[in-house]
Image (cartoon, rainbow, N blue to C red; front, side, top):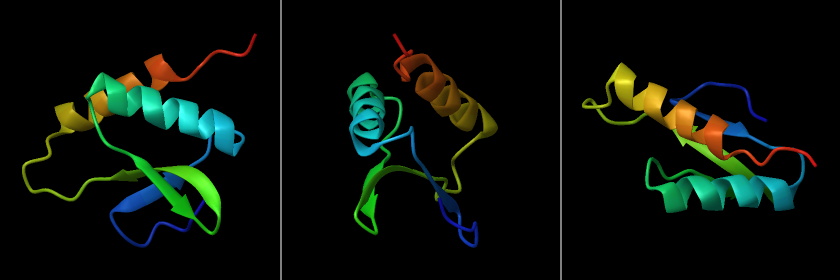
Length: 73
């Protein structure tokens, strides 16, 4: 949703409702924290901003997001 110029990106999962479902599930899972509102849209904000963030942390977060995205009926 945005040009990457910092250490973060914004992602949508279609519409605000579905994006909120994914963000809520990921946050409840406890793997990472990722919700935001940008220009009136609900989005997932993905940011790596700590020197201690390892590649395995990123891999675990991505795996959780993929696992928790609701499948279409």
